[in-house]
Image 1 (cartoon, rainbow, N blue to C red):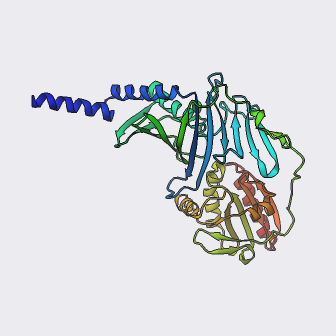
Image 2: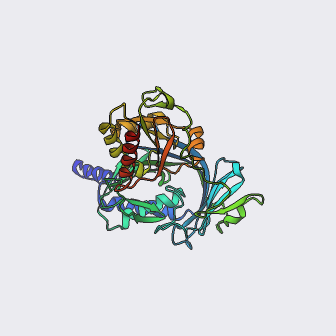
Image 3: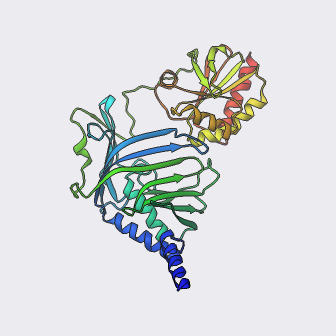
Length: 405
């Protein structure tokens, strides 16, 4: 009798913890079935982002989402509206299966992306958005993929933690269905890691964590209501106010002329470095300055770090100052972690809106390299970073300025 009871306990334990592959798959099919039943959903969504090694999120925001199952859309499979507040006073973005709208209320404008100007195999409607479509496709992938993966599911009391590690040659992202991304030259480790937290009370995922070698994101839904909206979905154009200017993504407009400040004296600035010290441009005494505008999470920017480190080592402090200004508004702990993790040996500074507007006319596309002479005149501006050519251009400009001094 005791042996029989022990067998029953062990059997139930295996079923509940999902240790057996067959039992785990059966449970995940149940979760997937629950997700398939969600035709509409309204919920608050917390979105957070980290760089690897960060102890606090560099980005954290709450939005209010209305999500619609959209099987007619074979690219994503869902539509959504995204608001900055639960009262739906201000829409941030929406996608109806055809176009994605991004709203800029401070400028009374909206950007329309019909996905024809991007050379991408998927529709970039946002990682983690809409949430239930995102979670559903991850679980469906676990159950059906032929990729090289390892899966684990742990019983954590009130929830199960599903861990997925994808061991492919390239990273796998979910924009609706899964996509194997082309291998970029900037990230070394292609491993893709996903964690799905599934609440036992309703057998639905309430949190998804995505971890890549260059970026970590986490999405948590709060206060969800299901199948209360009209299942017919949305039409994106219905959300555009009559007095808003409509622009097409990727199309150039002449309303904001380009500003070229080459040949002008560089405006002074005072910024904070990763040691919490104030640094001013005009306090720097070297004959030449290389100033990069960068962003944490930018692949080409990360690729430029070894070159900038080498510049710092090649030239004396009297000859050259190398510095980078982070302008994607990351928090100081993120800058400090990034500088340590990337072994940055030059000045790494936290930027602000003023320096972006003064030097870049508000453009936060990075990287930009500014090369300044001894009188702090801007002699050269280089946009972008190419592994083969950009370093040579910058080095040549430095040597020419040092010879002329």
